[in-house]
Length: 392
Ligand code: PMP
Image 1 (spheres, rainbow, N blue to C red):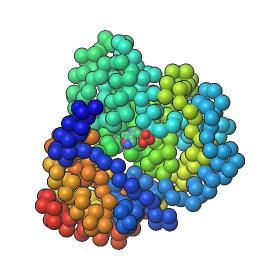
Image 2: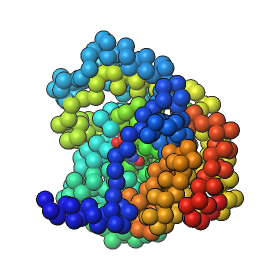
Image 3: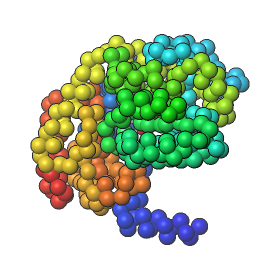
């Protein structure tokens, strides 16, 4: 096992080692966490709509757990398919305006399971170079050829589609909002390209579900391309504040996945409490528009104040605001200075992002107030000065 220690040492020297730090939620105080005995403003979680501590969601989960117990006991295809799954999937399909829906244990398993079920040897998957790791892993698992196109570069995608014209099945996959940059995929162009080349199109709405669309359906609905998208995927762990994931599409697609998605077939069903929590969160996501409005306004304000302070911020309009620092050691210094100032932030380094683009990934929540974010902007500038990084 010596090789491990050597490689870990090299990672530490390059400021690339990751460690697990305990972050406890503060009951009744969404938007904050406790770390090392201190209350910190949480500026890096994905609880976009501030639902993770919602009393009605918690109550629904408690009730389901009292009624149905802790675990589901088996895969959905064996005995674990509680009646609440079917009820939730009916509502999900209606919400997404699709024929059918399927709930997965989480987004990682939805992406890996779905991609490996849709493509195999002799097929090709076209994937944006900034797509989430779960998409990349799904492609590896599928054994299909991985045609990686430059970020949001539709000319490059076309060139790759031309090169692979003769392949049996073609699947184009993209994040709707990219998790580490906060920018959007050109979904209208992707829909046109998919039609032109007879490819399938899958969109991951992990960071756009709940945030875009009139009822939080996601970016495909916001841009009016939902009918062109063959596979709608999203997670319940971010804007929904719970856990789990969905896939929506045609009845045939869902029938196929029930038979072929190995991450669904060979893994225990979510507990009933989680399904109940998701169902309650879906009601709130659809109806509490003020959460989306508040989140989007907060995003615009923090973006513009950090931009005006001279930070290098990736373009976009989402609640994900990446401040690009570049150097790995510098981003860790900056994150420590932020923590000393009362802000919990994630220092994102390679391989999650390309070399030389280490960053602080700020992400906002509807739980944050205007005052808190204005104070945070000033603290961020001061922490940048103190840690000797650009901006501030
Ligand atoms: N897709 C994207 C774009 C993500 O950012 C994530 C989570 N980071 C996932 C999928 C995986 O979702 P989950 O956390 O539910 O496994």
